[in-house]
Amino acid sequence: MTLQKTKSRSTPHRPSPGNRDFRNRTKRSAQTTDSQNTRGAAHAGEATAQPGIILKAGREKSLLRRHPWIFSGAVERVDGAPISGDTLPVRSAQGEFLAWAAYNAGSQITARVWSWREEENIDAEFFRNKISSALAARSELNLSRNSNGMRLIHAESDGLPGLIVDQYGDVLVMQIGSAGTERWRDTIADILQELCKPACIYERSDSDSRALEGLELRNGVLRGTLPDTVEVIENSLRFKVDVVSGQKTGFYLDQRDNRALTGTLARDKDVLNCFCYTGGFSLYALRGGAKSVLSIDASGDALRIAAENLTSNGLDTPRAEWLEADVFQALRKLRDQGLSFDLIILDPPKFAPTAAFAEKAARGYKDINLLGFKLLRPGGLLFTYSCSGGISEDLFQKIIAGAALDAGVDAQIIHHLHASADHPVLLSFPEGAYLKGLVLRVA
Ligand code: SAH
Image (cartoon, rainbow, N blue to C red; front, top):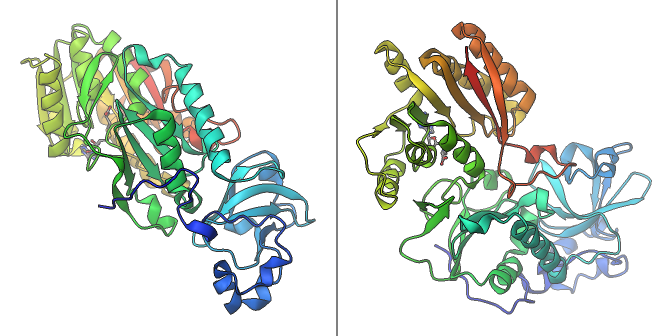
């Protein structure tokens, strides 16, 4: 566990080299006495050029459309001797300024854009402005009437690549997934502390994607003290959140609206909730008057929290049944037992983190959805989701259509679903739309 002392908010994470950007540094770049240029000394030839990223001819197109990622394949050369996390100017082959971006030497995404404006300074003030606007956008959503949890910062879509901040009551959980954000970690924590005044900022920088960025895993308190129990209230339901070892930042805030929709459609139904985690959809269905809810997850820890959540919401009822099992196998067993349901939820984990995994993921989605369709009674509803960035909405719908065909059912789409509004999607960054869902009614 990493514990960091609070620093003054203007102090960057890595003192002087920490927040270096390479504005107008042509003349200084060869000075090897500067501590930040010790690497430059070893690469004196490279270090004589002004640090920056120069793209191959024609590869500026995605940046001109304001897509914030610069892939390694688009890079002609990196001038100077920058290190991961440095802010660099990105230029076209013709030398035209395109953006300020955070460099990451080891990643396939060589840089992520901070700003499109040449006159912008990437400094503490820049982060204060970005964080303030993200917070202002969240407060306009009026979520706080019945809920005290929301995603405060949604990475690229809030102009802060690699930064996720989720709020659970007075605890903030921060997840850093890029070298650029890593460099500004303390500045960001100080700004969040000042603007949100949480009891604790906890860092869950332990996602698999950190390895792709060459970053170490980190899991620990960043500011304040973590309360013994963290709870989030969502549409007046209480959920315990395991911020230390739960999945993602501890809870799946993105499904808030979709869980609420399930609650409105569950009355008198026999419900099957697959990949239930801490019971989100199950509790909404029970509150919504479901006749029975069978919930399945492979994680015993998640199911133990689900049971606590049931009790803390006064929903401890024989209508609820929990099963620790692999969903792929459990669905087959239920089918073999001849069981059927009126409403089935399939909210699996990410099968395809990137498009490279799409084919294997497609087989997984088809398998569970085919079984789901077979387990539905006539007129039944299937809530089916994919949170895979590598599976587009269009492809997902095609997979579900294939599953229905093979299951021999006719189905209509009655809802197209996405993440809740506190997970906005930047128009120029379609990758932000990772969560897609369909509600289907079988004939
Ligand atoms: N619907 C949940 C979130 C689901 S997250 C909510 O609203 O909160 C995905 C869940 O799938 C995790 O809890 C994980 O433990 C579970 N899981 C992953 N693979 C599984 C498998 N093969 N069988 C059963 N559960 C699995």
